[in-house]
Image (cartoon, rainbow, N blue to C red; front, side, top):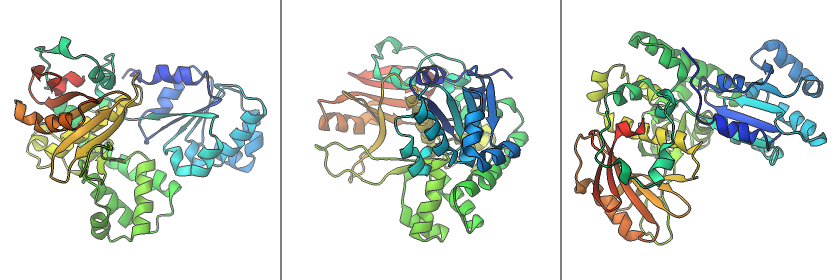
Length: 405
């Protein structure tokens, strides 16, 4: 299978001109090493190599000084203290683009180290493939949503491949497998390797069975309000242990919290975050959804579909030209909008529906928000399972899921 160009590649080329250190951070098997190896840099080492690991651990200063630059250092989370040595090296004579690091955990998991590299390191977060990357299409859905959408009205977009893309998720290796049993084995192996490698490196997990149970329960809450007290009770964990375990899941890009939308003029908003799995393939695996029939009949279908849209927005935001904040909207009287994209001068409300038809009533909570924030409201979007791109009112659009491709 040929290499699929990652949409963030052009941004990386720019970042290398301004930072001496660039970290490509993302979940295991997301394609970090492959991306780094396509940057045209000759020197490559991985800390998965036991010999390289021992050399770097025993004499970090000598190891860094003798490497031919620029250099790619893969799986740097295995030896996070190496970051201190890299900082000392670049402080002697700052030269941009010398170190390209990859890691399966975010630097926020190593706060003291990340603070010491402030101003010296650019951080790129790489997520599983989005639809545009899979189908080698140009454009960024966040940028597109922020522009005038009238040119797309009445055009048709097929949704026929969406369900299979949801089941498969976005990990590049899955695209090479066309057998459901083989996919099942890959996901099982992925989760086991993640637990045995990344988790053990990042945290002192005393009871691995409880962590695995918590991992599964948190993933299965995807698309719902994050109720820590309820989850703690179900997992049998105290507050401190649960918070520590959940932090590991966040830092290794397995789950993320989505914070509620906030504006000073809005009252009675729910303050609890929601929780989302980052990849629908892993989520479907945990739900034992392997084929289209089990997906369409699943009682979790709505949550999975919402998770899929969340992931597409999250991935697009990493390389969008226009920076946006992502949140959700819910009031105490249960007016809810799945996603809010907030730009510097505009708010876009996005609702997700699994139905094949759409009407003005599907926009009712979006209309409510538009009245609450008339000066900053930009447009409302309902993503749905039909084929027609429709404009139902001024700045109110019904958009097929197939438009995301």
